[in-house]
Length: 51
Image (cartoon, rainbow, N blue to C red; front, side, top):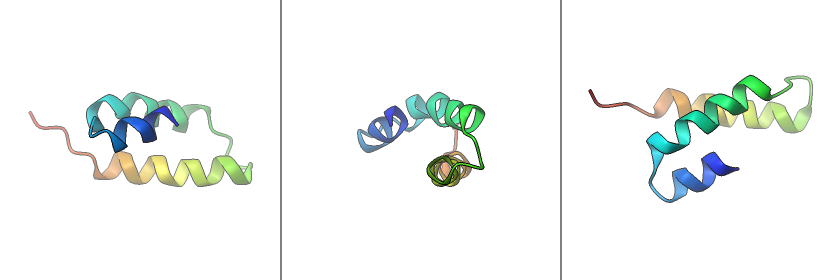
């Protein structure tokens, strides 16, 4: 949820570690976690880090 708040506040780079943590801790067999995994994967794939 912290990742979502940071995203909503425009802090996409600050949200990245929380999305990554979500992926590391989630359990795919859980229906709730499965939806979080999908959201985290989407956010991580669409967030670009400028050099």
